[in-house]
Image 1 (spheres, helix red, strand yellow):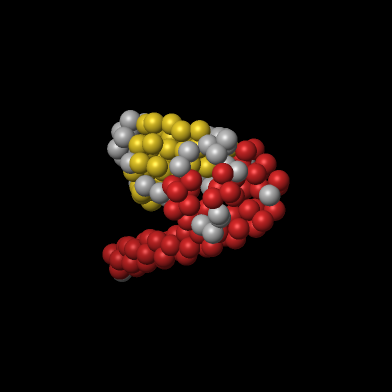
Image 2 (cartoon, rainbow, N blue to C red):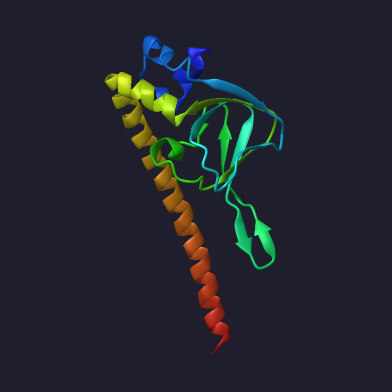
Length: 165
């Protein structure tokens, strides 16, 4: 395992090489072909993924009266992570992750992640602080997307009401 890759991942920022080495036995590498599913909405897998190479899309599966739509809500690039909700609440996946091109992933399970953090309180503090910062950034981004969607919906609603007059 190349700790430089972990060090460049925002979740692991501010950890020194000895602290990063604590994760080396926890990381499992997997290779995906374009179009392969990493996990599906509703899955109960409990792993975090770090994208080493390639690109992955995160998308919702929405059921509508004409079938199913799968809008992309995020694209994950090399060096970034995804699936972090599974480390926190062990609930089913809220979205689907699909490789947009041939990709290499590192996987860390909740059990392995928790063990490193429980055995190393300083590492746990740094990781949790990083994770909170990242989650807040992502929530702010989602808020902006939601505001845009609501504005589009509101304008469509007002236009509909004009037709009723």
